[in-house]
Length: 272
Ligand SMILES: O=C(O)CCC(=O)C(=O)O
Ligand SMILES: [Fe+2]
Image 1 (cartoon, rainbow, N blue to C red):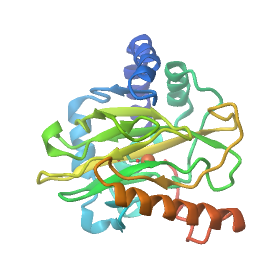
Image 2 (image 1 turned 135 degrees about the horizontal axis):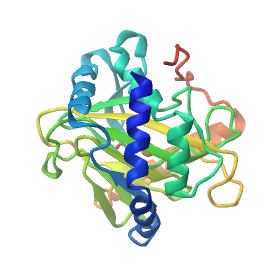
Image 3 (image 1 turned 60 degrees about the vertical axis):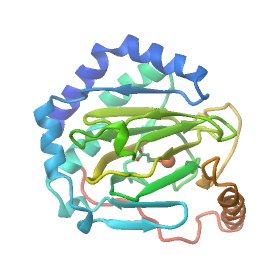
Image 4 (image 1 turned 90 degrees about the horizontal axis):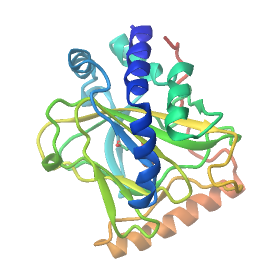
């Protein structure tokens, strides 16, 4: 199945390559984070199949802190093989190539270990506060360059909440990308690419297949390293303060212990 998915994704991205390229570049003028959204990534029936195969939240891990509340998993051995197929299809060199043509970002390497990637499910009350992603993968040799987020919940609309938001450098204003069914959002990751998922306010589950690309080239041309760093929404000044202290502590620990203290959450199973 993976091969068919790769071909469909490459065909879809190639068909709109020039328009997506223009949209990606032009989006810089919105909040400063470049992105584009690819609608109808796959034939509808196939996207619905992926949704049906998506694991139930009860089979996933609840991530819960003041920063976030969501279910995640990369236990592909326990799921319908279609889930690994769609995840790893987005990592195929042919997909990477057309994504590079769209974004102009070169020498990218998909994250086969799914370090922080994989599947996520969010239900009512779940959210992900404004943050910048960790800048590197586990070896710290490569810079994170892109997040590729594929949403597969039929009928998901703006009013449901649970939408992707990209913020300006000061986390004051945002642009919303609805987590629409069968949409692939491609966003760049830099030291200032603040983003969040607004609280889910509807019944239903917002299902997302996440992939990350890395590159030996720094997105800014400068050398940098950051742990995942959180802020908070503009109307939450106290939480912002707390987040800043929390970031400083975690960044400090990383300076002392480069591999970090947490257990490495990486995928080591077979790849389709
Ligand atoms: O679920 C999403 O839309 C975004 C999740 C996120 O922040 C990320 O993958 O880095
Ligand atoms: Fe993120």
